[in-house]
Image (cartoon, rainbow, N blue to C red; front, top):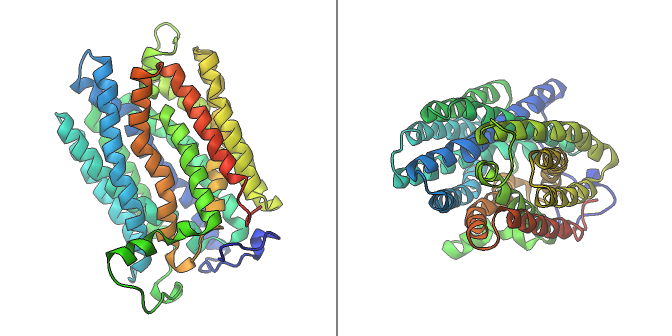
Length: 431
């Protein structure tokens, strides 16, 4: 795709996904949904419930130490995710095997992630927790980079909003599945880790068995020569950021995800220390209910928004509106720090952010500079999702401890999200 593609129609911006066929597409769409459900159930179940409880158990009776330690553990581990995602994408771009170029990484990353969280569940120190979660993040991002590249590889332009909607709905269900499973094992954390890792492996086996991954002779040709040396390699690695629309989508995604993860990573503590819960409700149970209500909003909006963005050929507009609504929704708990306020926030933000996730994924595939490097460039774009996970825990813990507490967290999240939505206004090549 050129740097400034024609604004007349996204469908006119030619991409060449490998032919899948109608029957293959009927299999591929739900498998993409299941694949993303498993990945995000893994991340959300561990990140929102298991890991905070594990850190809390290692720093008993000290709220400030638990908040600070969770920020450190989550932030350091997210560095590994950020680094491994584009690396995994570049490796899968260059893989040529009888099983395709994505499937080996989808399955291999899932198995490695499972083995690592198995060990993480038995970590008995902060150091071992950091090491285990870092390595698990790295493995899962190798898996996720290849999974994300399936859309530009195999889905035609006119179906990408629909495919992304499957992924968006899966994200909302992932929260229910992940936090639901995790909350069942708050007293037996290793079992929770094993179940979430096993879910990723099971879905990876299904996806790689039931869908066709293009072989080496079915994928775009690569350039015969390329500049040598570390500087040139890094330049090629990040070259997509030199394309204006790609860079704007990157910035918009990064800021919206930063606002979102400021809240997400501290849900358990928000319910424990900030929100007035109904009598008898435990914070872990509140996280599960909150996630289920979020899922209702997400499914209701995303199931309509993704296909409608295909029909109207308006991915940027849908991403802009949904991103703005998501950011504004973060003000609700600030003004109403109650259980009811959080439920209203869950519905509004769930629908808006879920729709943004779905349409933004389709939008991202339309600003990729080069089909031959689709997974690498999607991996670079995924830094915009993983990068905020690095800095969000540090920023959030600093805000909670020094800049006004949990209420200020929602204010900052809203402001950052609005800046992200604003960046999408300036995307020119996609409507």
